Length: 259
Image 1 (cartoon, rainbow, N blue to C red):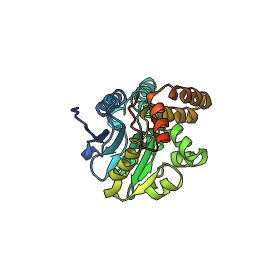
Image 2 (image 1 turned 90 degrees about the vertical axis):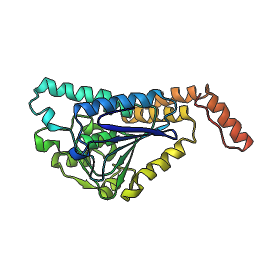
Image 3 (image 1 turned 60 degrees about the vertical axis):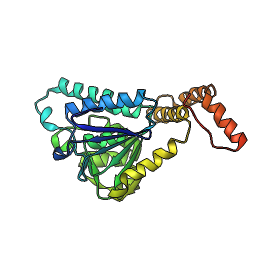
Image 4 (image 1 turned 180 degrees about the vertical axis):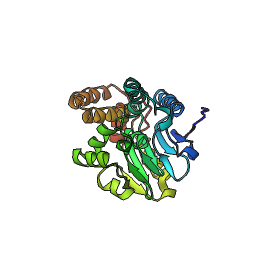
């Protein structure tokens, strides 16, 4: 897949997506968001993709925010549309994807960049990186789900503190409050994400997707228990369930087909 602002490569069932605007600190402009929407849709519908690693070009920034110049003269309705379209096509699309997305945070993750990372199912951060939601310094609030996902991840008090002070936090502090899964040295960032996805690749694909759906239903107050029960039942109808049980009984490794 050829993009202007992304580098996308599929290797060994992992889709590597790099936001490639290093000179602009990988800021999210309209074109980049459109390309992200396209690559997310590709990951969703492509069986060969078992997981996605999302990162930024260079070592300075994952994504240092949105491209402010593009919306500096917007009115209220245009601002609402900006948030709605971005959330539906990119941020919510990542969260609701049946494929696990891991954000490999290689540097600053600020504003829309942190919101993008929080939309992913897991976050790994380089030890030098800093994270924050500085929108109130512009007279705005986070508009791509940041108020919601940050609260889900770190709790109401810490979320309000981070958003209203606009303060950046360090990678170790982010791990301490549960904002990220792991902090690693910069050279180990992608390999740690690969380590997790390589474990996931050994599991039943349909069950992995069902588990993600159920967990997301829980955090979004979308009747998580009912979602879990329904998804649990559907798993019994899959060939992977039969293979998993047979492999367990026969004391061998399962060979899942994703069917």
